[in-house]
Image (cartoon, rainbow, N blue to C red; front, side):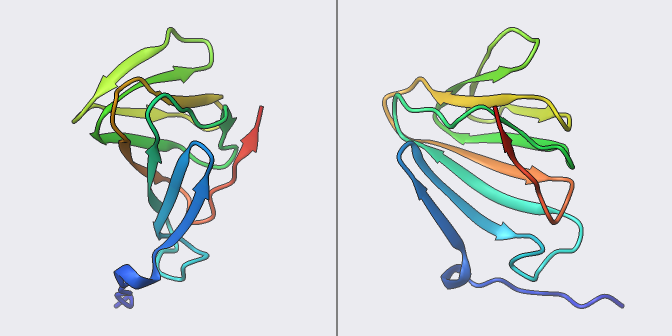
Length: 120
């Protein structure tokens, strides 16, 4: 049977950005998942994360709070609110912009424990 690994709240990795923050809960670098990366993206009002792609994995993004516009390469921008979910295939450029007056929180999950990211 595989080992169950617990990550305590005090062990969450937080990467602060000018536009918000990334919180990492599971993945290879945290030592608690061999198959996925799981985190949260927080966007400040009026801010957006840089356009990027993930060459080695799919990303699923679920809006937990707030309102965003998600830009996906080759598709019309889509407005998303609390409870909406989008799946982004590998290699597709995308980013999110907070269009609300409060922070937006997005649960993010990747199909690889070693998520790779490339900027535009």
